Length: 253
Image 1 (tube, rainbow, N blue to C red):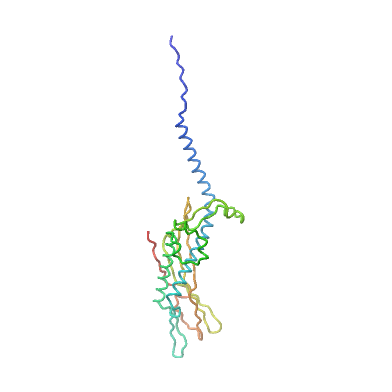
Image 2: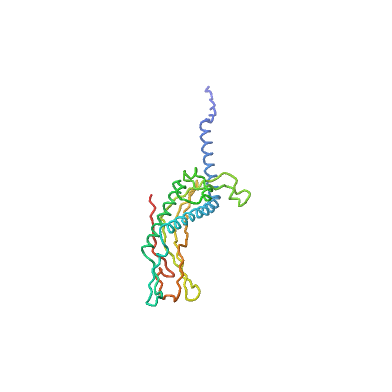
């Protein structure tokens, strides 16, 4: 008579159990991070974009004012042609001065923004009161600023609470600048000419799990001139509705 052998139940290997648990835990973490990333990223990017524009505008204004004040005589920016009676017939820009202003300003902004990206925030020569807001130790690692997670609550009491999300900036595209002019009537038989430099730069905001590109532009007045007497019939200042050629400095990889 044959004996019937009962199969013993195999015990589930502990090693396999640990592997399954690790995989499930890993997937849970990924799903959770993905969910919070979708929910929080728009709010964090809104805050980061405001801070990025604030810092970029400070750098642009500083670069323009430094270049204009230290390097150029604004009176030399304009050239005027008068008739025999001393009346102004035409007003033009001095192309040499314009080229120097745009070229040097663009280069100064580029170098300043690259310094911030590389963690050399001391090189941008901003007022001490502004630099207090930035942690220089973290800036050396390329972290421009940090966003407390409490800002997503939109509550003034909670905005500075919670862990902080580091934000880094990278330049992409190019820094461009062009000259804008505006002519307004000023009193009787007078004209007010306003000249400004418009600078535009595209930056990439880097959060731990996502990135976003943002274009920052700033229009900075550099000169104002009142033309007295009979208003000339011709203004050759890049046209009332046109801008000067754009000067662009490419970003090197």
